[in-house]
Amino acid sequence: MEINYAKYPDGLVPAVVQDEVTKNVLMLGYMNEEALTKTQETGRVTFFSRSKGRLWTKGEESGNFMEMTSIKIDCDNDAFLIQAKPLGPVCHLGTDTCWDERNRSNFGFFSYLEEVIEERKNNPERVNSYVASLFRKGVNKVAQKVGEEAVEVVIEAMGDNDLDFLSESADLMFHFMVMLQAKGFHLRDVEKTLRSRHKYDKDEVEA
Image (cartoon, rainbow, N blue to C red; front, side, top):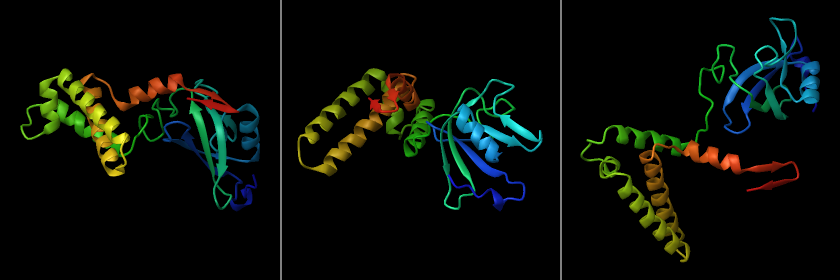
């Protein structure tokens, strides 16, 4: 990597650290050439601490190290993007990130939809809400609906109409998300189970 350390008067290059799985931004630090070398040699994210005036391995006091999995540089060669596995809270205040955020997976629109479903679950009296009506009927009715939608997906999968297949897939996914919450779970719980089954080798990935 050709890093433009000279761009900064103190030779310290900004380094954004991102969780390798959730992709959440964990913290911002600064690295000089020595910090980069030590990070690559030890596998633990190391910065140059401006307050301490020395190299500083994140977690050297707390034990909450960050295991580096990859390092990239931006298009101008003057900023790092580090992906890492945090071994505990990242912030010195005890929070998951330095922005006081929980470091959990975000599934984009699916996460938004989960919030809507959860709001309906917590307010089952909403008369005009289809989701609230499902929760009022109980988990058995929701499970039955998931079964019906699954059959529809299988039928459309054997046909040639892609739009109908996607439509039925969306229906299945939606009702599955309702069933998850009816059972007290979320997508992140399914993700956790899948991750526990995932075997990773540098030469081969099995799923």
